[in-house]
Image 1 (cartoon, rainbow, N blue to C red):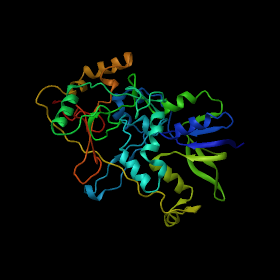
Image 2: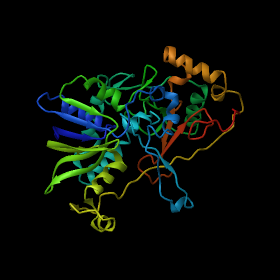
Image 3: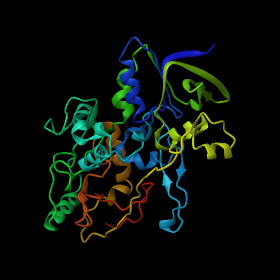
Amino acid sequence: MVETFDYIVVGAGSAGCIVANRLSANADCTVLLIEAGPKDDSLFLRMPAAFSLTAQRQRFEWGYWSEPEANVLGRRFPCPRGRVLGGSSAINAMCFVRGHRQDFDNWAASGLTDWSYTHCLPYFKRMEAFSGGIDDHRGADGPLNITAPHYSNPLNTVFVSAAEQAGYLRLRDTNGADQEGFGPVDQTIHRGRRVSSATAYLASAYGRKNLEVRPNVMVKRILFEDRQAVGVLCQRGDHEFTVEARREVIICAGAINSPQLLMLSGIGPGHHLREIGLPITVDSAEVGRNLQDHLDVSVKVECLRSVSAMPLLRQPRKTLAGLQWLLFKTGAAATNHFETAGYIRTAQEHNQPNVQLLFIPLLVSPDGAPLSFKH
């Protein structure tokens, strides 16, 4: 017997958890939320300082790499994407950055009028419960807890003071009225625990009888009648099965997996689909193209004094920090250590910041391993 729901949401990540929450708030409709990865029940997903470990574990991550990039001598780079309830919000570095208002206004000027900063701001405020309280730019009653960090290392204050001496503005709130300068990096951390889309939006909806959440289920294809999406073909282990949708199939599988699923379902560049033997439902040249991402470049500096957080990576302090977090959800493991940032223009002709500078008082590789034990 084929199961049928009003809505099928594919992907329980940053967007999918919110969509499932909003739709299932209407008791008159049924919602199925499908996630290829497992439940988000690992302590590594809860401990803020362990984020570098989660992004390296295949259980929670798709393991994508970029294609060779011509401008970096043909090298390839890892592209971590979450494969777990909460998606990439369950494995990321927990830095909460809205984006500069000019980016939104540029989209509005290009024709996307609903994406202006003024239009989006009420939704930003509605989304968050900000530890700094409510004002013209921040919300205090939303489901997503946002914490303005108290600096856990003196180098954060030194870094901001140095920027101020260099002529940059010191900001109280980098997501507030002014978005150019240096100040604290808001964190999706609450009471020492990571906040993901799953913990913020899905946990409160679990008790609804009209919402079904199914982890460890891979969606292989969207099913169509003519050009109307009517269901999905799924796989769990060795078992394939079909689920039908009375109203809509909603794809929230992320910037990489969403276009992949569309193309597997026959929606994409016709010449490409023909090359790999897929039937064409909609010939759309835009699908699977124009993805833009950003790389980070590490600048490593040796301190003149013994003031960095490097001793935390040595035993027994590393184990003691883990125990403190397990018992009290406080201490060095209760922060991501990205607590300060700057947003600057590299040239005067730019009308908005084009570089983000993140500061961390540690010298580590992308997987969190110490590169040195020097300060």
